[in-house]
Image 1 (cartoon, rainbow, N blue to C red):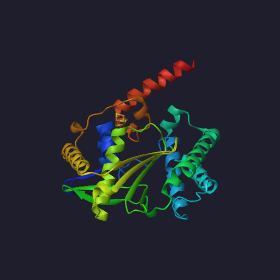
Image 2: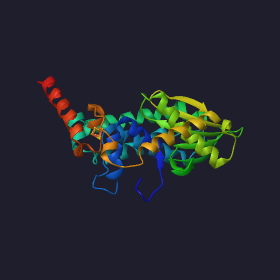
Image 3: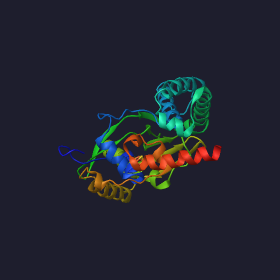
Image 4: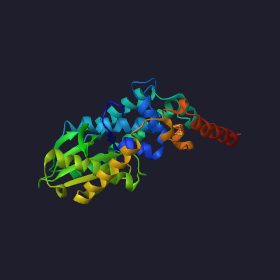
Length: 281
Ligand code: SF4
């Protein structure tokens, strides 16, 4: 959001701001073009990325709803877990003690379980659907704001509805975040496919328990997401530290990619490390 660009919004940016405004400030000013290296913060994040990539690769070879090859997908995910684990940040490793081959093997097993759940409970729900796209980033406009979305899967049902899916590799999702993310996806699909908004469904597939939660598009939903986007970008007009205060917490700071730049984050993680060391003595 530099002075030369118009306002931009994405679910991840909005979620990051809600979690810690200062983290969004760093993401805007120190992002991939800055000196912050894009390294993975935790093995859980590595598992999530690996499982998404393995599912996407496998779906490319399949008819929707039929014959998901868990073994092949798990092999792909295991290779990704091992190679990406080399890119983890040292402070996350220290805090979470996620080091060594045993930790990596445990995460490869976790990836396999998630893929089993996807193959057994989630993928069959797409039987008869036509796959439109997988993991594709798209941009569109809402009220003059450039919005980017990246649904994991977009399909068309046999009766012509559009289904936009996000897969979660963790179970503790927040309902308000799910609604926000799916609302953005649904409004994107509404514009893209020029179909009635109530014929668009948003699905959250929660892989740890194989559940799918569904919501359907509505004009009220479009109004709400439009208002939320306008409200968010109005707070992001001037990218200066005073408008992006820190909201530190030990869990989120320990995996924050900007920890090295943030005194407040270092303070809470140092306290946590001291407490953990004391508990272990
Ligand atoms: S380290 Fe903590 S307080 Fe600092 S930017 Fe990251 S999440 Fe926010």
